[in-house]
Image 1 (cartoon, rainbow, N blue to C red):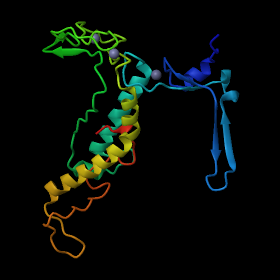
Image 2 (cartoon, rainbow, N blue to C red; image 1 turned 90 degrees about the vertical axis):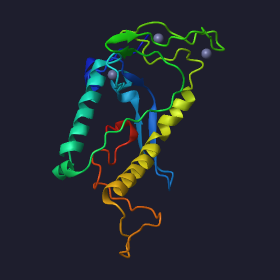
Image 3 (tube, rainbow, N blue to C red; image 1 turned 60 degrees about the vertical axis):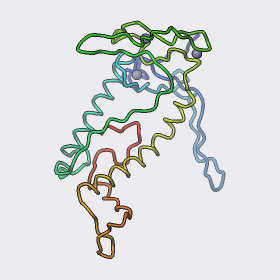
Image 4 (cartoon, protein in one colour; image 1 turned 90 degrees about the horizontal axis):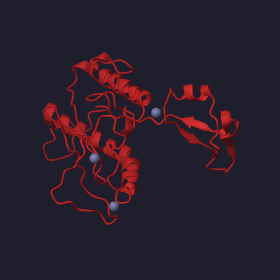
Length: 230
Ligand SMILES: [Zn+2]
Ligand SMILES: [Zn+2]
Ligand SMILES: [Zn+2]
């Protein structure tokens, strides 16, 4: 029997249609003394479970969560361009860069493809190959926007879920290093040769000093990779 979930708990997740139900406990322990500082358990939550919104970006999966993501992204980009939300208005004078970053592929997935307003076949292949699990590695379907298969692997057993999890786990560090490199590259292009602390121009391939957190880019500071809007 599934645990009945009170309506109030569902409202708490912003109306998420497919909340993640967590059951268990978390112990907060002092790393130095080993002392138990605080213990949280879901026993005292309504129905004995803690509901967490799924936070998907895909409206076909959960429209309320996708809308929150859409609105957050809008505010994030707006603040980066014109200021607000803790970003000074002077950011509007800064150069801005719109970057599209694509994660590596972890295996073929069903996708909706369009060209010139026409919907194309998902993954057409002349040779109808199958994977080691006997599943076809092609898909001739023209997926609808709401097709529940969108984004799902053609073969779940072939899909590199471990790689996907590790990539996402390392994404914050990847994002941090990327933004440092981006700022330095921009500084080199926009500011030209920069002067080192002794006041002499650095043209010898030395590292260009980091222009500082709020000198070139705004809204992404201090946010993790999942929030990278710009
Ligand atoms: Zn949701
Ligand atoms: Zn497909
Ligand atoms: Zn397979």
